[in-house]
Image (cartoon, rainbow over all chains, first blue to last red; front, side):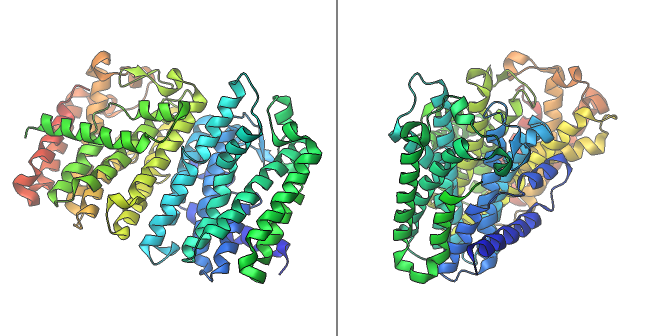
Length: 289
Length: 289
């Protein structure tokens, strides 16, 4: 099956899992949760499903972990788009939640999507062994919290009012937290569900995560807003230091390519079984959205 | 030991547990998390500790569950106080988080406090049995999410723009979700940690929760802002239906008293061991803050 087919299957199956998880919730907050959980590349879900497949994890359980990480991702985007944060009007080609509804609904829908992620992981369907479920909860909480993603968002906000622009080490640290931790967790989850050593997959995920962010910075400069479904040129407009502003586009692209090769190398122990994980590392830097 | 002493011990020990959990977090978001986690009556923590004590649960594990529910409570207050929600300047006698820092920091600190709650519960120190830890996560997620507390907050927001004021059934339903679920969960947690049937404690908690809310509405009318540490007269000023506006102060007080007697009756199976839980039900309607 081609990468495109496998990505599509991950998207469809994850949406089905999210729809089922969100079905009980009504009113504007329930509708906003569903709206925010639609679309997207589902890269994080794909990483859960593909790393789980390396260890023959039953797909039904892996899909609950995939739904959980996409719920956290959706929550982070809703709150990140708020007027007091990035103040974005467009996300995935549609109005952001606070534009479509209002800020209060956006705050609550984000809050409840985060809660839903932990409910998904702790539920019996994720794995028959409660130690596995508790470990998934613990590791996702560490990845998403103040020492993980939220910590990266806080560094991002602090950078906006700092006197000096960030240097390459500071940007790298910020991105490892802000986007890296939520790209690492899916690979860790596959290993946890598969009762496997997470080390090689985390090595893969760290290189992939940084390549992903450099590609994101390149898209903000070179990408097409209509294809991306969000505004471009925002970072330069805000005078924000990025991998591209610090390294230039040519060097940024060179580094992204090098990171893809390192990500691929980390998969060597898995041989041909990891073919689609290798392909997706390539896709991450070649994508147009 | 008197109720006042036991409440004070719960406050001190829970603060110590929260301080330890929050120690790793730095920057403004870490500081805002610590600030928001300070003070308060710690009623929810007290309920975890006292119901756990009924079943001789080790206090160290119960304290992690107590810290978790207080973290969720603190997160909900930070987000509830935001300008797009209740727009409050004062909380526990101090500026609210978005007034002391800014809205972005308040959103992130609330987000990370929610995450921290699940990290606390899933951590090994909560209970040696991972099935217990997973069950605590699952039940707290259900209590806090879109079918629980956040669902109640959504009903509250909807009521503000509704044509008709809420009637007593609608107010009761709203409050059972908005404040009731987070008062039930501590009692459920005690039973889960104690490997006991939660039914009698949930019966107690439901009556206590409603009595608590009626007392809150009475304090909004009759209380002293300085003692409360927050503004009074807000509900009447906003033309908001409350138990007091619908029933009058005399009937509201009569109902709160009846609920306390029902809460006390639910504790009969536990005899003298439940003395402080009985006392706290009385305290909930007699408090001045």
